[in-house]
Length: 243
Ligand code: E4P
Image (cartoon, rainbow, N blue to C red; front, side, top):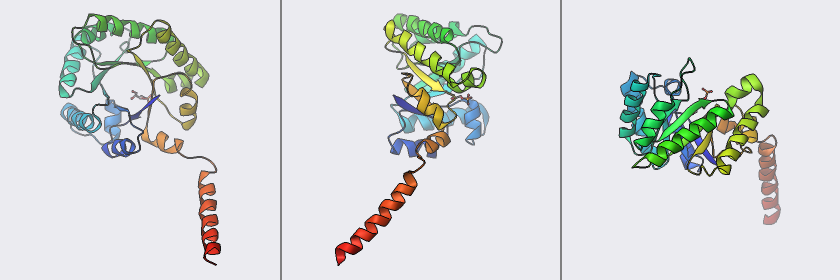
């Protein structure tokens, strides 16, 4: 299972790269804002280039800011020109439930890497996977990455963490059953270390984790106390050895 960093903070990304805990990055405009990116579309593009260079050849997912099919296609083409390792995040539907799959299909056929995002059901996930695969099969230049993002935290808010587990696991089983080998599941909206623990056992290919949740996931109730005891014991042992 890979770990992606759900952040646009260059220092945090560097930190986890140095720990071997960053196999990719996901962002969206809200995350960019939270990470201090200011200056509109140009600033988002600038940060996108910086992150993409920092983590290459690992993938960086960036999100379009429109639900209009033509505008999505335009923005996605523009994003994909910024770096080789960019996957463009497009939501499965718009805010009214209209399908955005026509844009996803078209862009995949053009060889642009897509991350179909904001999904909360098994049906959404398998339909997105089918569209990505159809586009992939018809593309002259194959996309570098194909992702489907299931938002575990958002499912949990209404239906509990176990339902999120089921949706992710069933989707992985379905992908395996039908040999959809080039499509990876990203679990998004991971909110707590408990989410990490549970959803790491679903068979998801990737968990994208905010830096603060990753930091907490490193801590164990008795580890600090155990290390303190080791240090104390070692000091005493060294003193004894000197005698
Ligand atoms: C994933 O790609 C998203 O950036 C992220 O996990 C969304 O999480 P949210 O539910 O906190 O918005």
